[in-house]
Image (cartoon, rainbow, N blue to C red; front, side):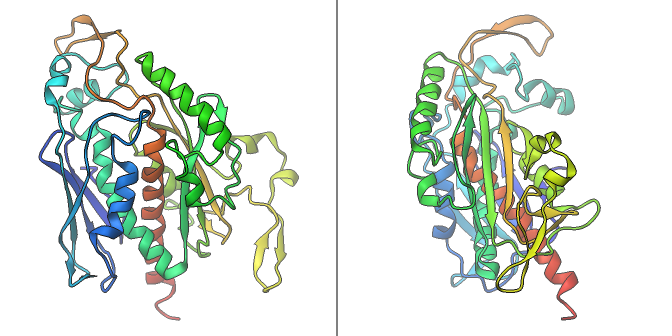
Length: 363
């Protein structure tokens, strides 16, 4: 019921924010892939709470356990189950929210749909659910790099009205990880961090944009109709908590150009490959990858749960106010970077397997 994503490389996430743990079951991973917890833990460390003054102070190590699908350090081709246990839940912080709906959060809609909700930490609507996605995404990244040398790098592009100057074609992971915000523009990152910290002290929240690039993606990934590669990427990243917008290539700015300005003209490079002089298409044309870098942007809204008092209603339809307690991110962007990377990796890995299955079986 909406907890599974993918076709050939398929994941199902499970668990609630304040339950015993969260995790993922991965089906369709090719056999004989070298895999250990250390291949996964790095990305989980980038996603975990408590990293800095601009994230939630909840303290979790987010240590992963592979409990099936791997034998003697290699994948078996059978379902891989990964579990991360919750250690630092403080459910009492949410007692008031058992009856009061947080404005712009999923509380009211969950109760409208199911007639019941886990109000401790938000249950499945918490960003803690993304642990399973990031764990699975780390495996997808490894497959993509091993098979096709694909690199996926995300970073913070904008916080509110502050925008970093980043070249997506040359940015490195080291540059992204050089500060707590994961914005490679060091000078702008300092301004962004100060703005987030001030917003936190004001008991409020702030949003922004994550940009992500996938390099060396093979030509031919994606389907020409309903499963266009950009459509699957859009669904993937728009399923992340707090996501509110998606762009690829020129995005909305492309609407300001005429066709002769926007078209990516073809040429033959020195190795005899068909390339494009520009990349306003964002690496995808007709729903299929063209071999150029895939560049997407994802907009994230300000975190819904804030400490400022706001008007709301109760589950009994009574008007009231709420100043939320608990530990929450004043801005989700720094921790959203590995989440976006993971979803891009899951889509590309799934389409790589689909392409191999359909188009390479007779070659």
